[in-house]
Image (tube, rainbow, N blue to C red; front, side, top):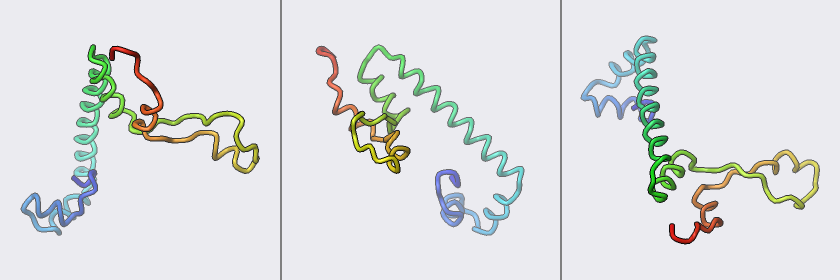
Length: 111
């Protein structure tokens, strides 16, 4: 829960524990390692599940899985824009929401 951004007080309330007990337990290196390992395990399962969905025969499922895997897409802007050298590095790549990119791409007929 701490990895999800929950405060120590919120975790204590959910667990039915005193906030100081939660803080004391979270301060122990072995507890932090155990939490990190548990989170890594859950993340790996989620990645595997999304990867499996990317191989679906249903294009809608593949699209949803792609949007989960890549909520934003980094693209190179069109050439021929402003040639101001101070903006060159910042404009090299642009991050846009996947949903916005998909609006620009027309799916093939029949999908």
